[in-house]
Length: 67
Image 1 (cartoon, helix red, strand yellow):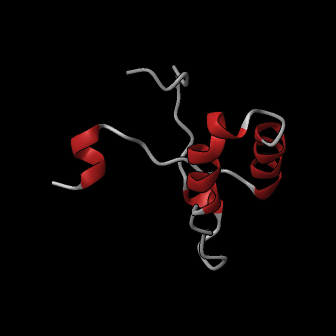
Image 2 (cartoon, rainbow, N blue to C red):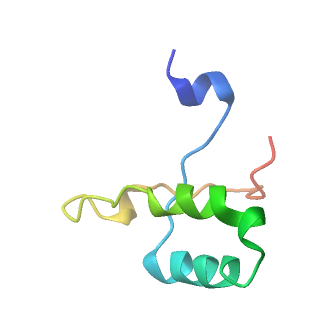
């Protein structure tokens, strides 16, 4: 069983503009509050350009992520 399946985590795509906005916001917060999140975000893997983000199939119906 994969690690993601064990923890119930999901994989999301985030573009560089969204990442920059999140990091910019986090930089306005107290360091101790956000240091772990900023480290995690800085280690995100870049999507292979030959794949492209359009391989993700849009879900129909409920898209709030709670299941």
